Amino acid sequence: MRIHSFFSFFLLVNLANAEEWSSFRGPSGMGTTDQNIPLQWDTSSIVWKTQLPGTGQSSAVGAGSKIFVTSGETDGARRHLLCVDQDNGKLLWQRTVRSSNPESVHRMNGWGTPTPATDGKRVVAFFGPAGLHCFDLNGKSLWSLNLGDFPGSWGVAASPIILNGIVYHNCDSMGPSRLIAVNLETGKIIWESPRAEKPRGGWSTPVPIEVNGKSQLVLNGEYGVRGYDLSSGSELWFSKGFNGRGSPIPFFGDGLLYVVNGKPGDLYAVKPALGDGQKSKMIWNAKRNGGRDLPSPAMLESMVFVTSMGGVITCYDAPTGKTLWIDRLEGAFSGSPLVSKSHYYIQNESGVTFVIEPDRKHLKVIARNRLSQSQEEIFRSTLSPISGKLYTRSLDQLYCFAGN
Image (cartoon, rainbow, N blue to C red; front, side):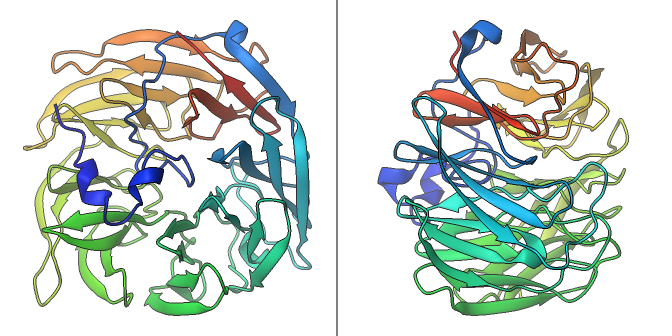
């Protein structure tokens, strides 16, 4: 069984921190984990639950005994970085960033969607036109960076990531767009790579991959997926997508990138190039089912799983793109999957997580785990395994739980 080569990331992520869930969707950026994830839980599995100030959709990240998430007030004028005690859920500190000219957001978005990132000493949070901000773990402000107005009516969602003392961040918008690298210690921009302006904006987060021993950043977008040189920001290759938005993060496994668009359009597999005049190659493309895609694709045991926003789940053969089966999960889906060594976990907006065992013949749901009995709570974050427990959040509640 192969998920993807974790060893290819050891040059990018320090071995000691390889399973620290310190940025959006973990060290790989693709929701993969070597941790033992429980198969079953329910409301009795909750260790603690904390009411959060404001609302948000960011996912939990951890550093030491602390958990970090973001939120925002309903008018967007104030956005918060929140630090919570991992043991009991107590709010340890809150840092508020004010926005004098809040951007408009889509009804499914808000002002606390980007997930923070930490290197274990500092934590970085992005708040759109309110800036990129760095704090130490006790909440002391270290630096702030104005990254522009981010015009548009849909809001922001891209999360910063930290690799080897550098913050990488996607600044796509309806106006001037760019990918940037920022010195984590000083807050100074190291390089910026221009990207095309978008009809609606851009919400995807860059992920590191390694191709033939060379590292690069991969970033999805409105027009397709691109690879960038980590040290200079130069564009290495581009593969055109099928139908816009480009919100979901691609999944890298067995030398291929599996990419979906956001709007209805084919799933496609790309062999990334190294640059130096080489071109990426689209290996196959396959029909998507179920309409819009917001959850990212995932590969497990040579199968690619993609769940649409409406709950239609499709399983493809990873090497060829052949559709193996199509089925439906109950509910609406905004968050992306968590992928263990043996199972695919995806949470719907009602807080029900479906645990799926890979099978080439049919959908095999081995558990439906409900975390909340409330009909009012909305869950749009992604599950975070941190220090032997699982974390998730609804718009205004942060959950810590353990299962069986």
